[in-house]
Amino acid sequence: MATRRTDPEAGRRALQDWAGHTPSDGPAPRSVRATAVRHTLELFAEEFPGGAVELRVPPFAAVQAIAGTRHTRGTPPAVVETDDETWLALVSGDLTWDDATAAGRVRASGERSDLGAHLPLPGPRRAVREARADVEQEDT
Figure 1 (cartoon, rainbow, N blue to C red):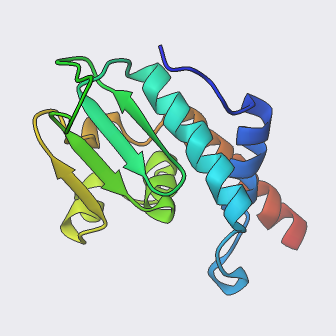
Figure 2 (figure 1 turned 60 degrees about the horizontal axis):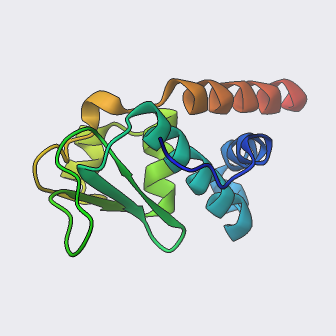
């Protein structure tokens, strides 16, 4: 099981804050994105425990997940790396795994590095939908 370092409530709020930003607002503040990324990476590692894949979202965090061969030193057997906006779009359902990899927004190598069957994450997807519905309601 992944060690939780992010307060779940703070993570949920950060994810909602991220979801409330529109392209015209520009990107969400770095602190919001960092907390949302850490929170969702922890959720991913809890949902899919293991050490076969190292999932990296620099500079914010990295976790090991997915059952299989665990590594303890050196280069892991499988690595997935992406930026924060892509990761949050993947976990929320704004972007599919296939579209992200086709666009070169995700670098994935090794066995078990295809995370398409594991994304989006239901909790973050729901939180983002609710946050956006609230924003739309406020705008009307």
